[in-house]
Image (cartoon, rainbow, N blue to C red; front, side, top):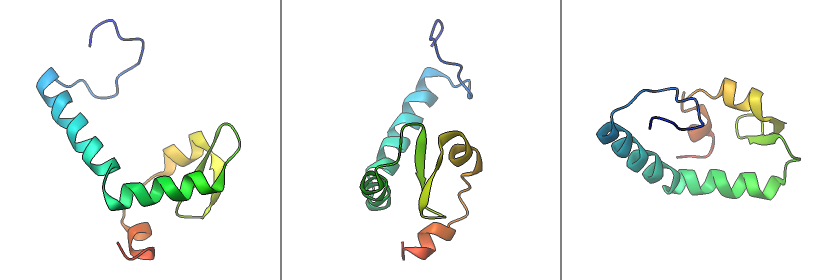
Length: 80
């Protein structure tokens, strides 16, 4: 990954990076991941905004990504 234009937050070996990519893809393609995508696309947020599943509205992308916790509260809300 040397020479990439992105600042990597995790310095993973190629093997670990490939394993993480597979896990992330599997999570995104799960029923829960697909539901989040459908909900976000329905909202049609303005440019620079993301749909926040916890509050149910569009908020600035930086705020949404900074506050994302994986507490499971949202999953419980939708019976996942």
